[in-house]
Image 1: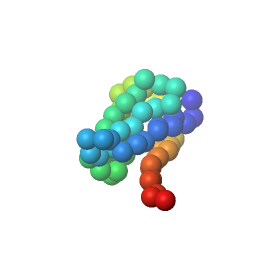
Image 2: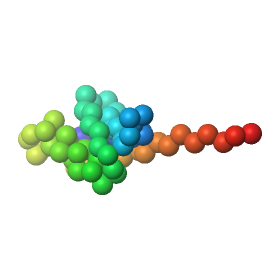
Image 3: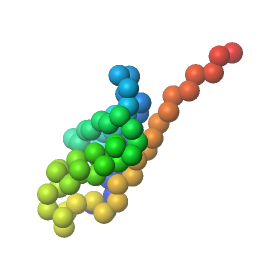
Image 4: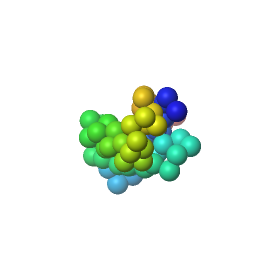
Length: 69
């Protein structure tokens, strides 16, 4: 695997929630910089063997925006 993609959303309780697409990896943080570090750590824990670890982590950040009509 060369790349792993995380779906990132605002956490209703504050901060952000990230989950890997196709892998059982989840994490959360209060800020985007903290989330980046938490995602990297979660991937390293899930793939302890560096040879099998994805070389690229992609964050797909989704924002919901409501526009009053």
